[in-house]
Length: 238
Image (cartoon, rainbow, N blue to C red; front, side):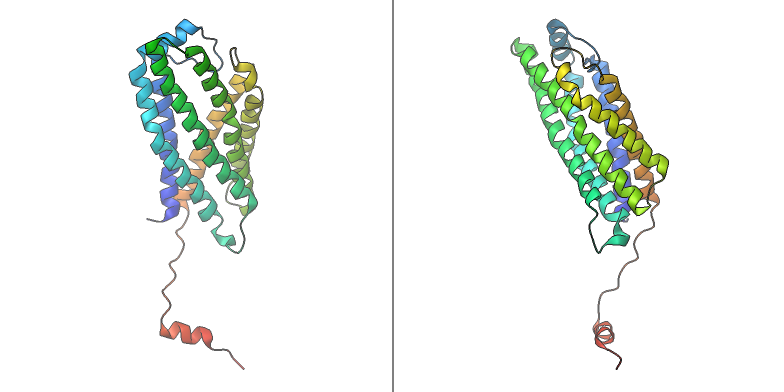
């Protein structure tokens, strides 16, 4: 199987895991950034819904691995016809994917710490504020990934204009939500719903890119160099 197809399947797997994880969080009653929640409500959710919250967190290491494979697949397979140089936009997109995985690791670690704090009745307020801040600022890296890989796709002619437009719109919404995320710490982010819309566009954008990777024809294999090949390559006409 070609790496392009593996990367496409990885992208679809990443989206599937995100959907399942968020369904588990919804089932546990985790407040969204657009909802105000009191200390007692947060404590109750993290104490009573620990099983669903832990399971959601347990799924995410695989999601981060799949996201990395997907992003590298886009950078390598989409731009393989331009191997003589590296497109800077592809590096911007790859950096965004890697950074969102790093920051969301901190989000998940804080969520697990909240479970422990809720059971021992200590430090919930501070941890919840940290969780909210990390979650909000992580959106800028999603925006970076959408911007970089959308521009890269357009420059290489690999994606349609609607696809790139979806990515750029999602990037703008996520960036706006990230910018206003400090106002959501201890309160409600006034543009949190824009972030949710941008996140949904991010999922659609990944699915569309994954389909492109899966359908992309595998690169023809290059036969190993043998004595005849070396001799032919060294021959120069007078």
